[in-house]
Image (tube, rainbow, N blue to C red; front, side, top):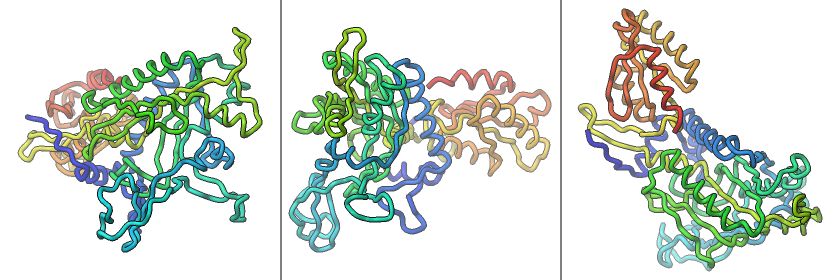
Length: 438
């Protein structure tokens, strides 16, 4: 049996829809570009990622405070942050077919769709506009947030007043952000609605290089822990002329997607840009008072950013495998146990034998008490059930057969090798639970 990762974006999108991970947004109406709906398995996959991230970066530390800020904020926030004036992409429009493109992603001077003449380049602000209240005027104009970071900066003083943390400490947030992308593309990679896991880690200015290196190592450790192959993750130092307006140093962690090497995560040193700007714009003092040194100053910030949707895509790509197991071969997702949306699947050998079905359901109920992400499956023959569970990345399948009725043993099948062995239910729980860590 030889494994091959012959992955293409078509294979990933097809599997994602076929097995209930991800669907096109508003599909029955022809879809809406740049939007995606997560199905039952996609939701589980995302939640597993978020839970692991929350455990590693919040629950297992004593210097983190989690917040969940509003999606819609006072528009003055985006003026102070620089987004209202500078959060733009270069836009060109075809004078023949009317389609719009990002100028920095085009090759050549003609429309890639119809070869028509393109307009002059102009800037396009990517924030989604909306209005508060009944009137639609400048006074009621605001935006859907284009990033989660500002929700943490505007809550900085609240955390100081409520919890009195000592430096260094961080605010963490998991939440949605929105960007009106000119040309969303590559499935989940560039969408108009997406989810972020983000940290703003507040430090003394003189510590930034040391803290930046610590977070670089933490982010690489995270990639390894969730099962992303080290040879598919690459660090890219962002050139000075390409840095965001708030950044003094940024590293992009890039991944080898089927469409090319592109950004997965980011690590930025934002200096004191945000807190200082919000202090000036709001008139509220956002400085920190150090009890030990008796100093008052505005902290600097290290920002690790993790995109959940890009994490899902990277995991599907790296876990996708084809091999020669069986007569026709198979597709399987080699997802780590802690990431897999289903941990164990329980089958009756035959669904038309009531005694087998009852025993299988009893076994399923017992396993599910210990391992919640367990499913019962009696749809189709046993071979089709194995293939279905392989495609969604289920690490273990348990089959209840006539021997089970006699001696209580079951057949345990391993996803990666296809190996099957007889085992008692008590041993089964012990074997499976050894895989609880990633």
